[in-house]
Amino acid sequence: MIALTLSEISAATGGVLELSGSGLTPDSVVNGSVHTDSREVGPGAIFVAKPGESTDGHLFAPAAAGQGASLLIVEHRLDLPVAQIVVANAVVALGDLATFVVARVRALGRMRIVGVTGSNGKTTTKNLLRSVLESVGPTVASRASFNNEVGAPLTMLEVTEDTRFLVAEMGASAVGEIARLVRMARPDVGIVLKVGLAHAGEFGGIEATLRAKTEMVTDLLPTDVAVLNADDPRVAGMAEQTQASIVWFGLSGTTGVRATDVSAGADGTRFILHLSGGESRSVAFRVLGEHHVMNALAAAAAAEVLGVDIDTIVTALESVQRAERWRMEIMGGRDGITVINDAYNASPDSMTAALRTLAQIKAPGSRTIAVLGEMSELGELSGEEHDRIGLLAVRLNISQLVVVGPAARRMHISTINEGSWDGESLYVDTSDEAFELLKSRVLPGDTVLVKSSNSAGLRFLGDRLGELFS
Image 1: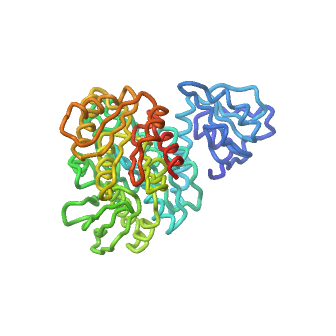
Image 2: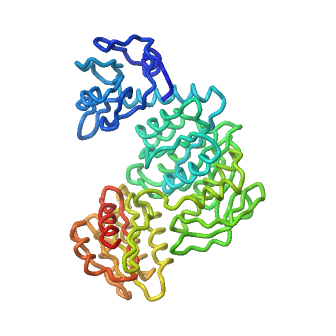
Image 3: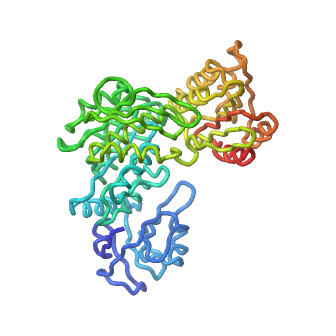
């Protein structure tokens, strides 16, 4: 974090500064990193004692102090000889501090901010854009999927006076949450990827999801740019809700940033990238899955807006080998066995894309195995959407379906009820059962996809299979 005095941090968070026993004064300067996980705290760091669903960050404040934290942000004073700022709400205070820091760095006139949202593809797009922008100047972008009311401000607090680009992934599970993140770091460029059924149960339906995602562009200024998916009618409709200039991306049409001559295989996807300025280049994109081309286009569009030339964009896109840990991650290798671990998250859209990729990269004479778990947070749509994915596996002629967990069982039932299918569907209750089953069923040359929502935990099953067949 940038250097701030304790009094400045206290004012930014609206808290009361307590210095008893710390040996510091209100003018003492703090410039360490900011954490909500005490295990990450080092000398000079700031620890935010955030209450959680199952525990309370205040319980870990002594550990943070023992590891050298110079400041604790707490909701009640603790009997520790460390500077403390007592606030009403630690999460709100974290966001307020991020707002203050971003505004101060932005006032220097160098930093440009990109916000990324959408039902699918946020993390991949953020990673691709980071790869592009890092080749131009100092760039801050979130780790993993740090995109909520805690993760996003922690990322924002990593900016320094030298930061040229901040790429802020902005997720939400309710209307109003993206708007709050946008107020913390108002984007110069706002990307909206897709409005789909991910988290639809939490939002209360697709229309509420649309309202939430639209918050990315409603407060953009006429001098800002909204990067919108021309192929998603819901996203395209956001053009009427913003004052910003529009840059389109997609696979259809003849304007904006687009891809032509798309061909997917086991080694990635090749396509011709066309920028809105008229330049085009061939791209050998190594991230597995044709659906990730849209994420590459969104990143390219934002980079073009920020003045990055097409050769730099292409070189960066071609350097990325995987979307993210547990996202279309290629593992295995022994006896020609490929494991695709894509079990960090799942929605009907991403599940469909992963199954289509599995079918698409199938080598002649080989088999495809889909190991599928629950798609969570779908609310009343859950049963219908799990049925649809089971039927899709049949229609794509997946060789073997292994459904894991009671919440996903309808995929198995809909599959076996379909009847006319050359493949086979099996159901097990747990990941351990699935592992034991697959140990004996996976044959040389097979391609195995492991896909589920994060809560189902199949990413660890994917890791075990990847290690087994490596």
